[in-house]
Each structure stands twice: as structure tokens, then as C-alpha cells.
Image (cartoon, rainbow, N blue to C red):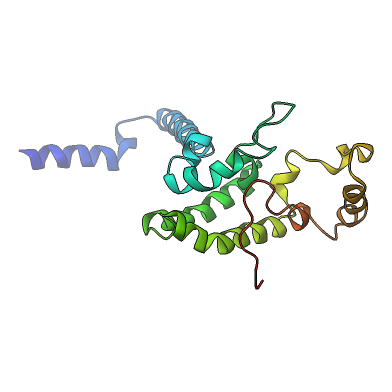
Length: 193
């Protein structure tokens, strides 16, 4: 009895054009595609929230606490950078590539490689180096989502910043992360490196 019902529905699902018009199938596929895309995009955006990023104690107790002490968290203009602003590119293709790359980072959570403060500190230089290398490779794309060279007012910068920005940054010899390591998080122990 159950087998016959299952077989009947299976035949219906495997040969829908026998029962439904081509127009209905096209419209249904279009609607299903929109629902899938909407759900996918909603899930991707949910993983960019501060609540998601700080949902595990490894991030909440370590790097999020450090971020709260910086100008990127509290400042005179009231503009706050959340985790994804600095760690996820804004344009879609780069964002998807970063999300795939970040999915490998979940292994650190699953296997407990950074689940205590001591383990996190032991891995801090490696984690930071991975992030610095990534930002160097993409020309500090995430920084440039907010900080645009064309909008810099050199009259409001220190002489040292003007020198670096107007020469090395302008010529593309250096990118933001070359000089701004530790801008939002505590620098790791760099002794011996």
C-alpha cells in the first residue's frame, strides 16, 4: 500500500510534464529560483552580522573585546565597523570567495584549536598572518570599502601619515595593512619574526 503510494508520487515527480503544462513548469521554476536565491542571500547576510560573528566565545571573549577599545568601534562620528566590514569584501563575487575560505575556519571551532585564551594566544600570530596576507593580496579591499584614497584630506593627517599616503600608498607600493596592523585587534607577539 505505502509502496504503491510512494511509486505513484515518484512517477508524478519524475515525469511532471505529463501532468503539468510547460508554462506552469517555467513559472514554478522561476518562483523556486527566486525563493532559493532570496533564502541563500538572506543566509549569507545573516552570517555578516555582529551577533553571528561574536556568537562563539572564541571571538566574543578575544577579538571582539579588543575591537571595543578602538576607534573603529566608538568614535566622534558614530560610525561603527562591524566584523564583516573588515573581514568580508562587499562586492558579491569577492564576498562568496571569502565565505568559502571562511568555512574552513570553522574547523578551529569544531576541533577546539582556539577554544581557550591560552590556545588563542598561541595561535594569534598565525591567525593574524593569514589575515594580513589575505588583505595584502586583495590590496586591502575591505579597508577601501570605507577609506577611499581620493577622499583623504592630507591637511588633517599627521606629517608621517601624509608622507606614507601621498607616496607609497599613492604609487601602489604599499597597501593599508602594511602600516595598519593592529588597528582593531591586539598585535601578536612579533618576537623572532
